Image 1 (cartoon, rainbow, N blue to C red):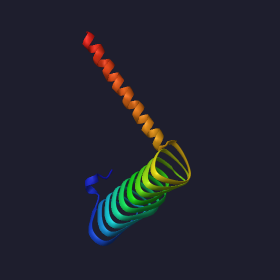
Image 2: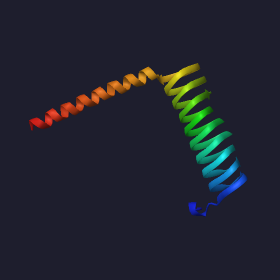
Image 3: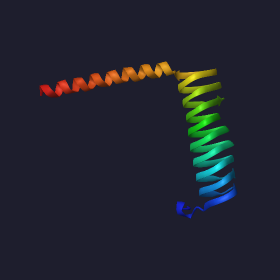
Image 4: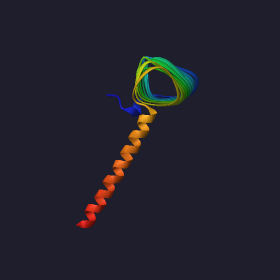
Length: 173
């Protein structure tokens, strides 16, 4: 078994191409990954195919068949993905995503836990919670913005009542 300390670290290259390899950290202007994985990627632009990363910090990220823990980017566009969280000004996702927080988000043919943003465009997708100023498209949502507010108010009220009841019962004893 390879220990994490043994993974190579790629630093400050203009262009870094990684194919069929595992690296710990990559810092470059342009990172291209094919059938590779990295713990952390910091770059201006990232292109990934059949690859995985723990976290990505970049201006622009694109790819197909990705598995990523967290992405922070100005623009993110990927298909056939499994991503924990995406934070971007513009995001276009297709696949399974835990959370997408973006100014403008396009969600196509996928499942997402949370989608939040100003403009959301959806096509044949499911979400658990959708928070948006404007929504366009065909989406099945478990909770809308109104539902989320109602659930928050009811759970807050219920919590306050339980705390008051708990205090009243402890004062009697």
